[in-house]
Image (cartoon, rainbow, N blue to C red; front, side):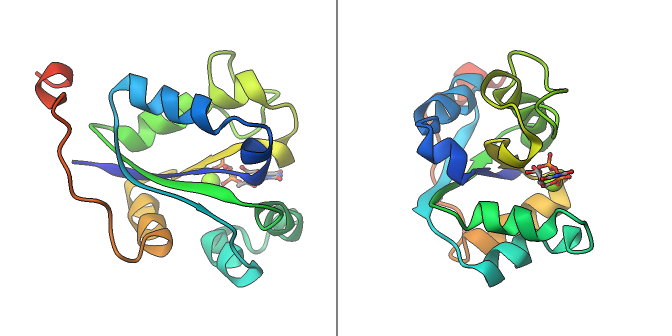
Length: 148
Ligand code: UDP
Ligand code: MG
């Protein structure tokens, strides 16, 4: 089953959005396979965002991510990478639809509350970086009520 890496950024933690965000993924029917509250250092944040290292906003992005604790998660389910991105909404909250997390809870692109992997390949890479011991191995007893 497909997995994605989701991170509630420091602004999401500070603003008390952790429960609300977890709720949206849980209610959809996805399964939580990893969860931790963690403050990361600059080299770690730079590694997570290494593909963006040439961008002009890279250093302010890294400053933002290391500014406080984040909630790192692995979520599992059919099409969870793409559907997770839809639940999160467009990168710039000004363009995120209402009903998405960024559309409902964010205004500026540099304070957009949440990260989600953009492909299965980056999901696997990011999950391995943040959860070197791997996901928690369990099966939800609701499985047959969510999947036909
Ligand atoms: N970002 C920014 N300015 C920009 C583009 C991106 O501050 O012009 C930040 C924003 O927080 C975004 C993150 O960099 O979430 C990673 O950018 P990416 O293009 O990967 O967007 P995402 O995958 O998070 O939607
Ligand atoms: Mg991205």
